[in-house]
Image 1 (cartoon, rainbow, N blue to C red):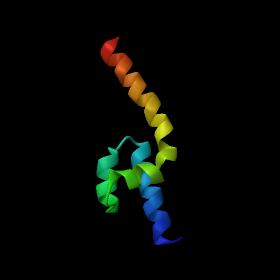
Image 2 (image 1 turned 135 degrees about the horizontal axis):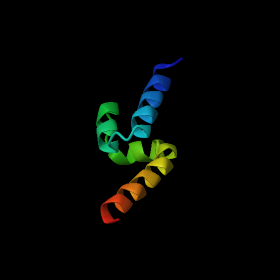
Image 3 (image 1 turned 135 degrees about the vertical axis):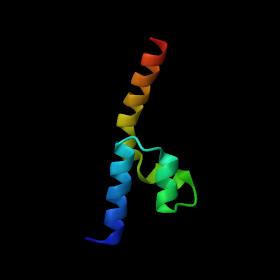
Image 4 (image 1 turned 180 degrees about the vertical axis):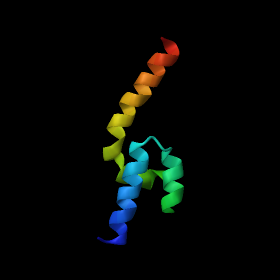
Length: 60
């Protein structure tokens, strides 16, 4: 296993657990949050549902 694989796994798990993408970006040392979001966008679809549920709770 390469070091890069560990970084990728760490970032994927953190984003999957709802850790703020800006925090993950800073941990990885990315120059921009855009790099993080472009690289790990495959984790985000579930986060969309979580955000929708949160908004329903607030407005419901």
